[in-house]
Amino acid sequence: MEKLESGAQKLGLHLSPGQLEQFEVYYSELVDWNKRINLTSITDYEEVQIKHFLDSLTVAMAINPKDAGSLRVIDVGTGAGLPGIPLKILLPDIRLTLLEATAKKAKFLLHLIDRLGLDNVEIAVGRAEEAAHKPQYREKFDLVLSRAVASLPVLVELTLPFCIAGGRFVAQKKGDIEQEVKKSEKAIAAMGGRLSEIRPIELEELGDKRYLIIINKEKSTPAEYPRRPGMPAKRPII
Image (cartoon, rainbow, N blue to C red; front, side, top):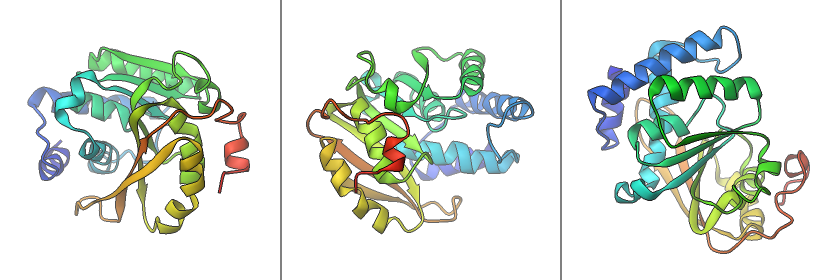
């Protein structure tokens, strides 16, 4: 895990030998399960270190390490556990919920957290549009994460309802995002949020423009949001 370790150091993050071993186990399980279910198109050892693990760890730039012990975090549309599980390996004290709509992927996640010896991790199976209306998840999280799930106007509707007032949503985006951010302004306001910061991630390993879009939740989301499954993507609030 040399690429991961050196990249993390550039972000000011220290990974212990035990944490690096957890990432080794993560890689081997990911590649093994990927033969049976479609988890990722990236399986090369060095590419997984950079494009999955290191990229996931960049979300730590939006977290005060002193707060990590009390953070309730949800990763919406987690897929193979990204970015939630790498963040949990880095900050083991966070309380993490992984939301995934595909049952086969959820089965992989259950197996993975057992293999990694992670505690305080819940796997929730379902769509964000439905889970966000359940009392145990609605406005219960300090930090909401999502990576490569949807365009920002859609993503805001799917994620901010999980966030407590005073919490924040961090979206990982890459490329030319100016128009996407501008189109999301109406949705952010409708969900009770405010754009706080667009933080560039400058790592030569990642090789392209990457950003953390940080949105603060200032007030409760109206009860009608998110709309029924499929509607946020079909008719985004723009």
